[in-house]
Length: 349
Ligand code: ADP
Image (tube, rainbow, N blue to C red):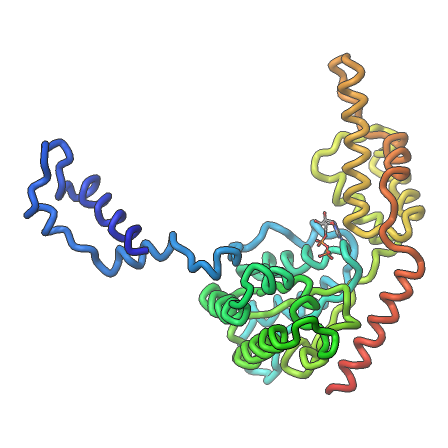
């Protein structure tokens, strides 16, 4: 940082104030002596130099994900709006009414159902910054420094407020006692996390959202009031949500054949949605991508300069290559875990 501050000052002296003339054969020492590095050079340098611990913590200035980039999940969106967007946008109403907004929200559901997308969208739509942290990274990248990393993340969030901190795979850093491989380290991290969350004053414009698909192994201490005391279940998409998700993914200018578009009715996509039980949002995105790749391959092979639009035959072919990631049993297991989680939460209140 010191070096950077010096460079900033030097650049100014050469380019802006012309205190130094580089054309002379030798720069007179008295000219150099007059140039002093000021506080503002250090402050400027700080913008470019990140503390090592935080190199991986990237504050995204409102991520570009909007509500309509997420197909379906209207209830979940509404819940997140009320829990995150409203307190960040209308803190005064909450204060006047004496309503305490949640500090922590736990998104629970199978992988690939759009939890990360939802957290990003709620940040964007609330004009908040976004810090994403993956649970396993806290343990591995910052080995031995994990508590400090947690402290720094919260510090950074407070500086970037309004801010959403998103902990993906929270179960990696906060598994229930007894399930931990190295209980000493994870205990310290959990304690640090709890201390930071307890320390967030209400309405200080920092909201913590965590996501997990292993609600069964999360430390119950995290679920007490004032911590992750709101749980939002993000289930596998139902038929209607699957249709909406397919539409989101063809929206970005994908060239569709008439048999798929069918005058804007997308009857075929409705049919596809009905037939894709067990497909998550991520699976459906992969399905559309695969269908597009098949059309592309045909285009290139045909050697005719004619771009082949994506048609029913491509989707049908793609279905054979992209399997659903959830079985009926998986879905039942997630429903069961969601019920247990809600029970734990109510028990704790
Ligand atoms: P999770 O965090 O639940 O594992 P992600 O949010 O990372 O899931 O989703 C992975 C990808 O799957 C997204 O980038 C997106 O392309 C797609 N996806 C998942 N759910 C949806 C959805 N509801 N609408 C549109 N795309 C989705």
